[in-house]
Image (tube, rainbow, N blue to C red; front, top):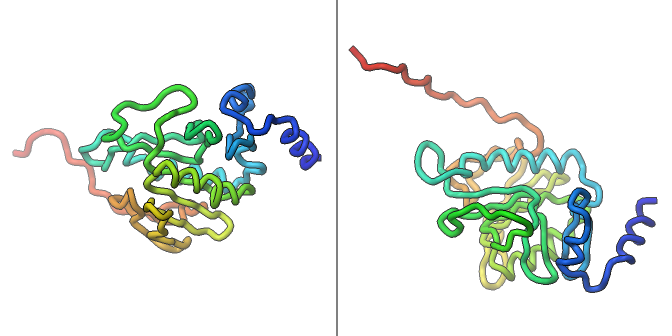
Length: 214
């Protein structure tokens, strides 16, 4: 059964595991993270709610995923589930991660990425303690400035900010709220879209006609 296969997998791993052990898993099946020197599946049982929330968060960040200036805010690089190296015991695959272009002028390539992100978003799933405790400690240790935690079960968004003593929760939003969450305050977030609602229709100005006026 699934539990027996999990225990067999964990028993076969060296202790402590290293990045080399993680990368030894064939890339086409490597959906794992190295956490505190142990290799775990990224999500033991990824649900439809988890996948939809991840897709919604990544889609909502699109106005920021470009060069600064112009109609959209810009200023960021984004990636979903890329391997990010923190230290010899910790290489994670955040659900969504972002890097400020002013700090990281060129998009990182290859795997694992060795530049810590400025923002991460984790969608809680079966491995809740990883996102709420183990990975959170590492994110804080390496000064990831902004940490979002999306809880599909409670349908909430927690917005955390780094401080020397730990992460501070600067905002908590529920499904029926519209918020301006840092570091993306420029665009309102209708929290319910993370959990499956369509965005509210907004009136947009008609495009200007080409040519000069008489």
